[in-house]
Image 1 (cartoon, rainbow, N blue to C red):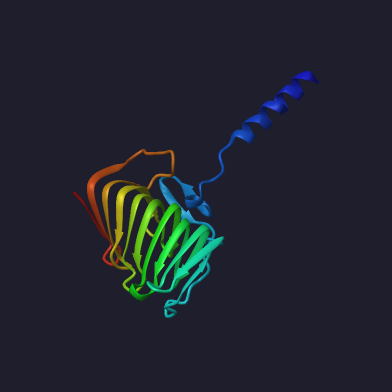
Image 2: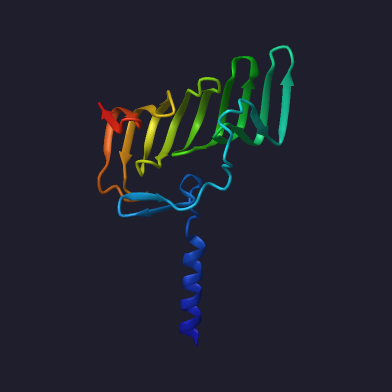
Length: 193
């Protein structure tokens, strides 16, 4: 009986130490160096791509009427078209359609997920820049890190000082490292330098 109890305690201890799935990987099923989207991101509702409005929820918010700049702090959640964003802090400058976000960033849009430290985005052109990014390209079943990631169109992105692989997290059976990567999803081409 004593061995059984010790064995159960050991199993309970190991399962208590298991790390939860990182936010960026929730709902993804990873198999043999490829990623399959198992479930849609529950926090990412289907957006209306024709609706130009920006919806923001936060613990606290302030509006400077002179500059029309809004500042949001604490558990900030932003929805714009098909983009979903979580951050600790978000500044939104409505006249220029600019968003700046910092702290515990998580970004999700169809075919793409990322986490990072600092985001700048123009909601009109949908161009964005994310610093210190960890990313998932769901259409290509790829993942990696980038010092800086720039999304220039819905199909074209650039990455500086990157790593890129199609293997699951923790398995880098093959890994590309490059100073720069350009990905054109429309024609299915990536270039690394």
